[in-house]
Length: 367
Image (tube, rainbow, N blue to C red; front, side, top):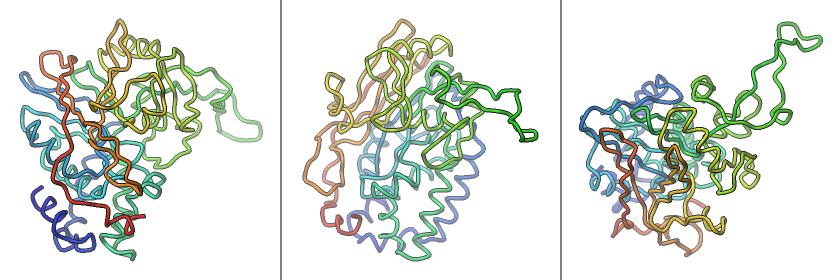
C-alpha cells in the first residue's frame, strides 16, 4: 500500500515496472486467479459471531481513496470481512495498482476479502474507459504491456458475480436477474441431440432464482450476453427505477430495469432482507430525474415489506480522471454490517482523499 502511494506521487507511469516488475505481477495474478476461479458464482459469506462486514461500491482506480477507506474502516482481519462490489478500474489513473492491491489482500486473506465482478471488468469497458491505455502507458505498448493487460482480463473472468452475507444480504454490482426458460425437450429439426432453447424475446420476463445464478457461466467476458447466458449481463448492468415492473434496460442496452415490486419478490422468495448494489455514480443518477442522487455516496432506493435495496458508490469527487474539468464533488461511502443479523446497514460517507497527485498531465497518455 505504501509503495503504491509513494510511486503514484513520485514516479512517471512508465516507471511503475521499477516497483512492480512483470515477474512480481506474474506471481500475483495466477495465485489470485486460482483462488477466484474456485469460488462459486454467488459466494456464501458466513461471518463469525461479533464480526463485521464492510461492503464497498465502485472505486474506479481512485487508489488514494481506497487507501483511506481501508484505514478508516479498519484493515481486513479475522473479525472484519470485506466485500468489494466491482468496478476497480477505468476513469481513475491508478486502476492497475488498485486492482492488484485488492488482489494481494485476497491472496493474503482469501476467506475475509471477497472481490465481485463489475461491468467494467470486461474487455469492452476497459478498452473504452481508460484501463487498457493505462496498462500500456505503464508497461509499454509492446508484448510486455499487452501481456499484463491480457492477464488482467483473464483474472476478471474468475471474479464471482454475487455474494450472500449471513444468509440475509445479497450483494452484486448491478442487481437482480431474469429467469432463463429451460431448454425444451423438443429436438431441432435436422439437428441430432440438440435441444431447443426458447428465444429470450419469446417469453415474458420474470425474476431468476439464486439456484439459476449458481449455474450460469460467468467466464464470458463481454457483451452481448445471449440465450441461456443472459444472467451475468443482468447481474452486472441492471438498474432499479421506482416504477414497478421488470423490463429491458434500453438506456444501457444490457440488463434489466426492476421496480420495488420485483425487489420485494426477490427478497421474499430468497428469504433475504437486504440488497446492496453499486454500478451507479453521480453521472448515472443525474440522468434519472426524481431519483436519489449520489451526493453522500449511497442511496436507499426501495423500501418494501421484506427489506430494502441500497446503492453504494465509493469513488468520491468522481470521476478522478477525464478530459474535462467537470467533477461531481460527491462523497464516497462504504457500508458496515454487524452481527447478529447483518441486515441493518451503517453508512459511512467520506470526502476525497487529499492531497492526491494531479492527473491532468496524464490525459495525453491515457486518452
